[in-house]
Image 1 (spheres, rainbow, N blue to C red):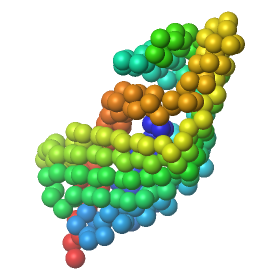
Image 2: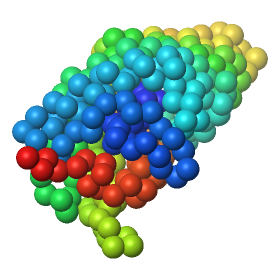
Image 3: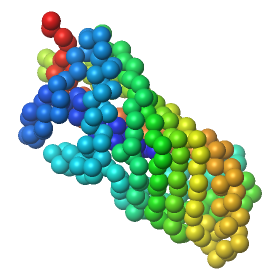
Length: 260
């Protein structure tokens, strides 16, 4: 699900840079007119622009920013570590392909941008189906059942809904006002999930099947346990990405006020 928000980040960065022709020595295409932050329909403008850009980026990427096609989204390697009462372990995922991110629908955008000293933005999104497949290697336990295996996996998530949130405060750099992003958050919910994996317990097909059956039966409990760890990792990854945009271009250029 983190990759879905990376797609949103790419689109949102382009929304912010919409009227910037050259920045950091890179010439960027002009996707649309920038959204004026004190317009009554600023939130609607961001929603429409995001929805326009996401299908475009999911197929074409953004070559000027070294962003390749986002559907499927390829992840070379990802390490996850989690620890709770009923589940703990660590897993390394490699050569992961995520399909369906281009189907993101922007449901709603809420914003507080009138105050030039602060920014608050929430984006609600929906995806009907996301499929992730790749290789894994992990160890840990579910309840009293030990897990240690290496194989391939396929996870299909249905009716994925989520909210992406960010907050920022104005800072002055070289005599100009910029917006520094201080808080980034994510909330996710899934309607249903189907999990497939091979060799979850090395050398024991029977125990591996038991572990897989357990994971499919109690996927929602596992999902809720792991979400806090996912949210923490999400914040660490996405805040620097956003600040690469917000601290590079003055705020009045990112989201200019309406001078009319």
